[in-house]
Length: 366
Image (cartoon, rainbow, N blue to C red; front, side, top):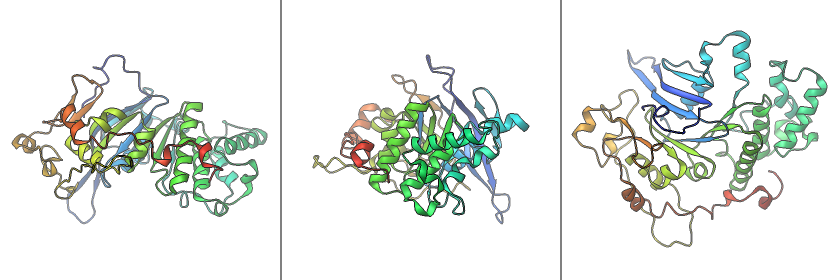
């Protein structure tokens, strides 16, 4: 996807800037076959912003997250964190950078060490980053503060993970991510393993922490209603590429890419006051294998708008004339009025979704 940062006026300098990021994996036993997990990814995240990352399973969302965390090294492209390339850092500079990007995992049961107490789990990062809170008194005070920030009691520090519910375990994971005062937190399906009412509590906790601390989120989720609630901007992935980006309102209500429109039409509609049947765009066929992606546009084999040029030429990333931050990779993008007609029921408010209520409406933390 082409970079729009230099051409769009008044765009703030991003905290995280990714350009032409490419990551390939060689598949054992398949000769010279290469799986292209990420293909020239471009995105940016501003300070205090939430970027929602959506797409089908296998599209590359988790690989992108791992690469941003430097758990994978890209084959091509650059990552800039406030202008600095983290892959060029070594020694103390690299150690200091790792404090600034943290992770909250999907499974609150598997992501915590059952042999450690909650206090040990949260304070473990300080054993490596010793200069952050050098004294035991400072660490104890910060531990109490973190437990209270995420809605737990200081007395919970001595309990093991098995003594907590799923929602409480995820709060411990969030506290661990906050322990190093990061600027960016990658959230990989952070509420998918939780009950509905507990999801609401965790989502509102994340929102409260962002407003209080100014931390930026990269929020990966299959649940589009959750993404719509929490994200400022949305990036849609398909087969290793980001095919559309824009504000949450633009992407959900006026998608320009046919795949995005199909994805939004599949989102459950919770407005029970509306008796109109929900429209659904049904895609033909399965997602192609990333070992052998289609030529030209990767979505063309499932797209109802595909024409001959889609098979020969990869579509450029083009911004909407009226909405310069709304970018899509498509030779024949949807017009706004067409998208509105396709998604009319889906564009209604999700106010009836119980996950959108405040924590105080839901009682004690779970």
